[in-house]
Amino acid sequence: MAKRCGDPENRPALSAFAGAGRVCTVLFLAGAFLASAGRRAEAGAVPDASIGLISTAEEKYRTRITFLDDELKAFEKKDYPYKGVSLDGYQDTCRVQDRLFLNARGGSEKDDDSLILALSLPDGTVEEYDPGRVNILSFCVADDCLYTVSNLNWECYADRMSLKDGTQTSVVSTEVILDSAAVSDGMLYSLGYDENYANCLFRVDFEQNQIEKLLTLECQDLPSFLVSYEGRLIYTCDGILWFYEISTGALEEVKLSGKDACHLNVCGDLLYIGYTDLHSDDGDSRVERYDLKKGCVTGSLDYSGPVLQIEPGDTAGQKVWICGYDNVTEYDFSGENGTPVRSVKLAMDGELYPGGFFPAEVG
Image (tube, rainbow, N blue to C red; front, side):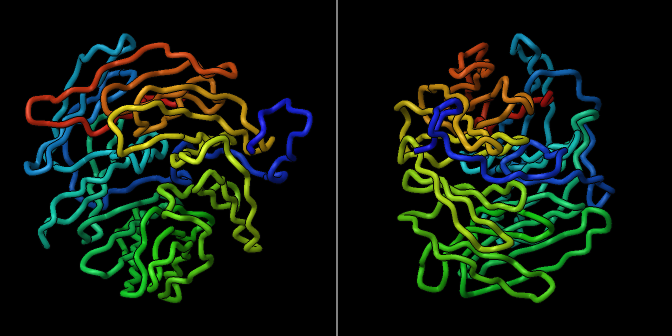
């Protein structure tokens, strides 16, 4: 079982990882400067805010962001012409510097492509990036590139688009299905299914135009999240936290405190692990904070209901935001046990349904 820091039999740290300057997100990100590579939606200046709530529609091209102040009171709303902008429990926010990347899923029609939106938090403008795909399931931003994974009619598409000039490279396969994805050292990795429907870990080689199977997973079901940290890929299933060493192919496992662990988010040297059931409207959930340097759990908090998002409020692990179906709550996580500080209820905004939230700043 994953040890708490301070236990005398505590396992050693994963390794003496070097490097700094990691960005907080469920996906491994490197700093990116975004040039104009698509249409721009104007929205006026974004005021100082504590968090932003996303409301969206499935059939109409309409999404609204409501900005809340430090008391979590709404004081500004901005509308955008997109539909299906929702963080549905299988992704957290993707942020690079002062830009928030979101997936506008569009519809199921052939010409209703998914768009990746880059919302500029300082001024509210949006850059659109269109890989030309329907049903984008996962995306990553790294090294001035946008990586997307999508599936349609038993065809799988992995795309890499330059955020500088829009140049796109694609790999298409009818033999595998890709799902959650992560980027490490300029390479795209994804969890998915092979031709025999086995759960696998894949690497997409855009230069060689191929998808390589790296590993058949020892998992009953396909993990929901794949994250990367300093040359390792991390996923969880059946109560086990798995670490895959990219350079050697070595696999390390850590037993967790419960079999319902499914949600992962890396921020700095901290891994947040969500124990939850997304298919239940009630029930208790738990979030653990795991120190990747020390190799142990440093704190936990309880949450009533399913956990849809885990958003660190700072890189030191002192505070964290949790989003469920009914509310968004900030927790003081400075000690071993997280305690709720403030909360806001989620509700329909006219015809728009709650699509998630984002912290305005990560301090």
